[in-house]
Amino acid sequence: MAYPNRLHPDERALIFAAYVLETGCTVRTAASHFGFSKSTVHKDLTLRLRAQNLALAQEVEKVLERNTNERHIRGGNATKIKWKFG
Image (tube, rainbow, N blue to C red; front, side, top):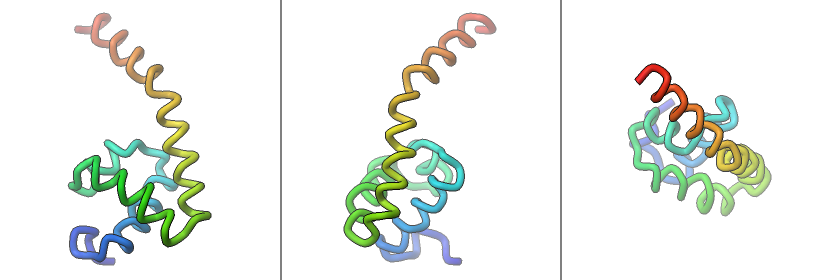
């Protein structure tokens, strides 16, 4: 498989979606993994993916929403660790 930066944006969106579904990672983590900006990954996962595969987009949306709902917990844990071991 070609690396995502050499692919058409629609193909890149499918690769991002597969990675997010496989790992359950955040947009930030996926962006870092593939070397793209968060904006590019988010746009591919929301707009481009929805236009080409609605069912897949809905599955990815569930993962992204779960990550959004858990964000405050991850931030709180990071702060706790920072102050405990800081």
